[in-house]
Length: 274
Ligand SMILES: [Zn+2]
Image (cartoon, rainbow, N blue to C red; front, side, top):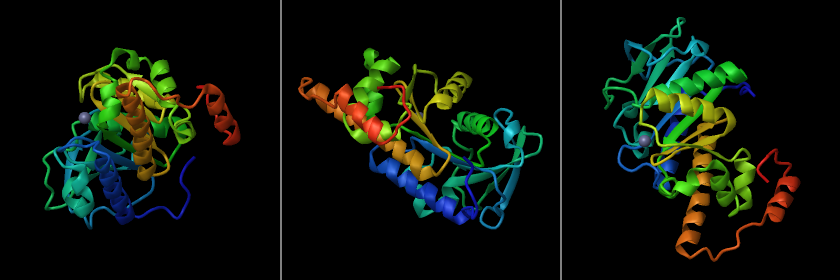
């Protein structure tokens, strides 16, 4: 579903990205400069006033569905927790050219990064896929490294999507309401690689969150970047419960399948998971 007018202005979107960065950092999912955020926007925004330095850049891969669209992208090496204090120093705005192969990168004179995030290829490919497939006019992506979820992915049994979702959805009724498709699980794939990009595009067609095993997650939303941050938080909270239960010798019951079914029925959740 596309967003309706009145559309958020650039300043509001930058504040939202900053808040999302703080939230992700607040659950310890972005140590150091880990993690990255991007938005793709389908309505016109005036970027040049705040981001007056303009350069042509090749896109890491073609994005024909994003011709004429704007991306707000975090810079390589910038800390998610610092974005809110000075978004202009940490973010760039890419206007995708009509050819879908190049972009104009707008940055502020005081930018503190050389290049955009090293995961820009995955961000771009997922935005392109979502815009092309769903006709949305807004899409947000967050890559974060939530420790409990990432830890579970180091245990071979949890790298099975069915096992992971059955064990994680049992701790809080909210989890299945907010992640009705569960979490998609990818194997370990080299960060920044074309293989990770392709697998992430495919995974995010079916899920709002994909787990990059032994690395972190990518979460998406076509409503707001805060919603994408929420999804990281719901997934990580479920993993925290699961971790506690592992450490506590599996003593907890968790929600039974019957209990989960009553939740799904009461909240009219479209899911195939229970
Ligand atoms: Zn990472």
